Image 1 (tube, rainbow, N blue to C red):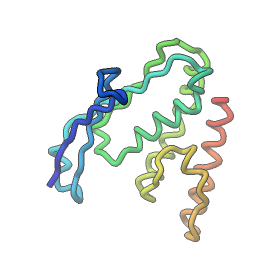
Image 2 (tube, rainbow, N blue to C red):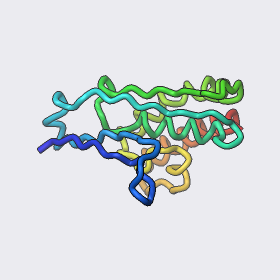
Image 3 (cartoon, one colour):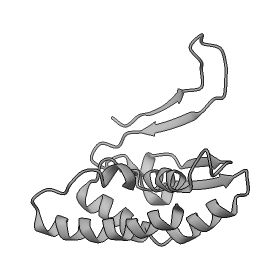
Amino acid sequence: MCRSWIQDLGRDMNGKGGDCWVVVIACAANGRYEKDLPRVDIFVCTADPEMEPPIMVINTVLSMMAYDYPPEKLSVYLSDDGVSELTFYAILEASRFPKYWLPFCKKFNVEPRSPEAYFQIEPLDDPVKTKEWLFIKVSYAGVNMTAL
């Protein structure tokens, strides 16, 4: 059975209110309930490129975009409250990478879906996956150098 849960993650250790993040988690059993899943909007916020390096922001956005969720029902937004030129240009340069990363994630059921975390793991013995893994890793290295 497919269910949606809304989870309040914004409470501090004393149970008092704080900033509240609402996360919608939807389960689809073998895609049977895909048409019944709700539309989901995810907002990624950043303000300071020194505290939140652009490569970290890029990895967050890419991992959200790679969710195993119907793409027509998932929207990911990035808000840069600090209006950083560094973050803007890093995201602009990285904007070409999802066209390779997202199909790769789906094809090989990639976990974790953050490129930075994923490329810490070596590919398996599958030569097809190894070839594609190397292409994606080289593409990501170009994104990583741009965002530094």
